[in-house]
Image 1 (tube, rainbow, N blue to C red):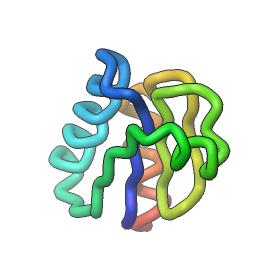
Image 2 (cartoon, rainbow, N blue to C red; image 1 turned 180 degrees about the vertical axis):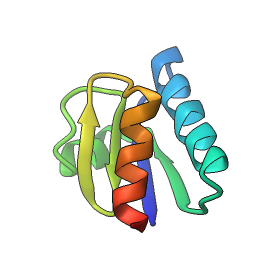
Image 3 (cartoon, rainbow, N blue to C red; image 1 turned 30 degrees about the vertical axis):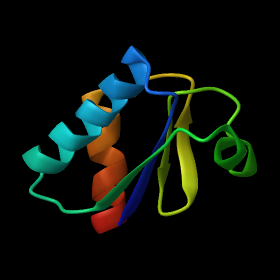
Length: 80
């Protein structure tokens, strides 16, 4: 699974990255996690608000930090 976390490196962006890492560890999953802070890359991906999260090329969250249950559901559906 490829996960991209889009953000400038602000506190909310770091919180999203931590939440994703925690969910992956709790579920014993491995993934390629990439953090993107380049504005041009964000715009190319259609990101208008950060933090944003993309799973296997699909933006699943933008402008907020999903809760742990949402993250687990998304990660499970990708590995289910």
